[in-house]
Image 1 (cartoon, rainbow, N blue to C red):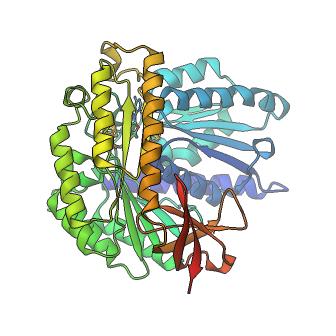
Image 2: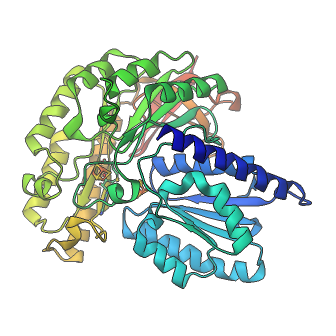
Length: 466
Ligand code: SAH
Ligand code: SF4
Ligand code: F3S
C-alpha cells in the first residue's frame, strides 16, 4: 500500500505542475470558492483541497460570483445538509450560463453515495467534476480532465489508503486540526459515515507527530486530533499503540500547549485514556461523549454497544478523576421506534448528567442504513415537540453550568475578534467554553487570564487580568 500511495502522490505532483503552468500564463490568477459542509474531518479535507489549489496557482474568494472554480465539499449525515447542496448547485446554473469557463466541482461524503453521484451526473449537467472522499488526492488530475474533456467523475476509488504529504492550507493561528485516523467501523444503524468514509485506518504515530511538530513550528499552540472514534486509534496498526499513548507523545511536542480531540465513542473509552487525560495538564479537560439516547431499548436498536448504566459509569469515573471536566454530547430525537417513554429516558439522562452543552438532531433517514428499514411510531409533529422541549430544558442546564464560572479566573487562548462584536476578542477556556472580552489584537494567539464577569447560555464574558 505504501508503494501505491507514493505513486498516487507522484502523479498528483505531476498534475499540480501541469495545472500551475496553465494558470501562470493567465493575466490574473484564477479564483477558487470552496464551501465546506459537515464535520471537522470535512473541514480538514477542505484545508487539503485548498492546499492543492494553492499549489496549482489559485487564489481564494469569498463570493461565488467572483469564482473561476467552485468546490462544494459535502456532508451526508442528515438530509438537510444534502438539500442545501442541491439548492446551491441549482443556483449556480445561471452563473455557469453567464461564464462558461466556470468549473463546478462537488466532492465529499454526499457524492460518495452512488445514487447521489448518478443524480448529479444526470440532472445537474452544469457540474463539471464529482469526486468522493477516497479521491481527494486526485483533485489536480480531475481538474485537468474536466478542463480537457468537459466532465470528470471519480467516486469508485477504493478505500483503505492514507495519503501523506498533501499540502494543507490551514485555518489561522492558533488552532490546527490534525486527523489521526479515517473512516469508521461501528455501523451505528442510523449513520451513513461508515459507508461514505470507509473502514477505520490509523495514520502512523510518526506521521501524526511529524505534522504536530510542523504546526508547532508554524506557531500553532493548540491541536485538535480528529477521528470518528479516536479511542480506537492504532488498533489496526498492530504495534501495541493506543490513543492514550499517542496523546502522551503529542503533549511532549515543544510549543504545543493544548491538545483536544474529537470524537470519543463511549464503548471504547479506556481507563488508560482517563488516567492520561487527568494527569496531563496539556490535555484539555473537555470530553465530547455522544450518548445519542437514554433508553437501553433504543441504544440496542442503534447498535451503540453500551447501556445507559455503562455510559453513566463512564461519566462517573471521568468526573471522579476530573471534577471540572466540560462534558458535551450528541442526541438523536425520533429514532425509528422511539416512543415517548424512550424519549423521557433521554430527558432523564440529560437531567442526571447535566452536560455543559448538547448537539441535538431529529433523526434523518439515510438510504442504505439498517435504520432506514425500521418501523417508525411517532409522527413528525410529536418528534418536533419532543425536540423543542429537550432544547429548552438543556438551555436551562447549560446556563446553570455556565453560572458556576461567574467570578472565576480562566486561562483563555485568544483566537481572534469576536464574531458578533468586533470590538471584543474571543477565545476558549481549557474546557472549550467561548469567552469574549476586550483587549488588543496583539493578544491573538496568546494565553491570557480572564475574570468571568457575565454569563450567557452559550458563552462567557470577562475582563482580562494581567
Ligand atoms: N463519529 C461521531 C459522530 C459522527 S456524526 C460519533 O460517533 O460520535 C455526528 C452526529 O450526527 C452523531 O453523533 C449523531 O448524533 C448525528 N447523526 C448521525 N446520523 C444521523 C441521522 N441519520 N439522523 C440524525 N442525526 C444523525
Ligand atoms: Fe456514525 Fe456511529 Fe461511526 Fe459515529 S461511531 S461515525 S455515529 S457509525
Ligand atoms: Fe458529514 Fe461526512 Fe462528516 S457525512 S459528518 S462530513 S464524515
